[in-house]
Length: 316
Image (cartoon, rainbow, N blue to C red):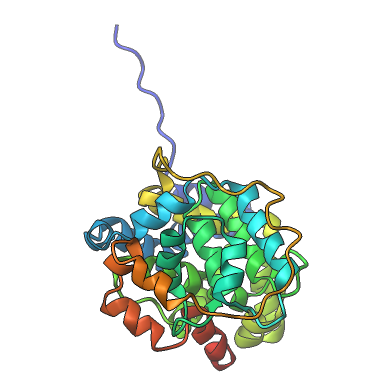
């Protein structure tokens, strides 16, 4: 005899509507709506990751592969080690010169010049926060570790609770670095802010309550309700897109090891300086010369993505 057919589970919406009481039905519908919303949230980040993973220019320009080779052997603790070294030499302005850059990142000269050419402003200064984003993004730390590091990096209160505005600055910085590697346009702060204002109430109940109390814009700029220990809520919608990125795979087998944890921790402050012209000329066959195309020159002519984001923050 054939087995008796098994009853199939009712669709989520039907199950919600058949709940025993109206309050239970309402809660079930809200929970279903939140799950569906979270699956689509952080769309700007997922879209940026998808564009990067499909871009032929990633390999054609060679910037992403070179950065992955340079920082691929870095783990989570190595990222924090670079930040600790910076704390010993920082002067409060958030920028470093080439001499300071050398003291933060232990690497061959031609590799340092490549990073400097790509991210410095007019060959004079580098935004240290952008540098830390690069190191973290191209390291082999786990996605959760990268997220925790970046949230702490952009948390101006240093209390492990962020605002929506700080999260938008983080998004713009990460996607800006990836865009630099593919030679494409990076999202603007206004675009990231508008999208997060729409998405955060559905991702965080605390944020939704804050928005009801103080309003949409004030909650986004001022309310610290995005707790870092809830990072999984922010990362879940982008995890699949992240896993398709080249930086999520195993690093090159010949990636240089990071400096020891205590390397450079006793250095003193140094005045900003630029790399010697002779050194740059001598690196003619190096990565910096090979990839110093128009996109890098255009970046050198203006402020970094982070500086622009900071300047534009007050508009949102």
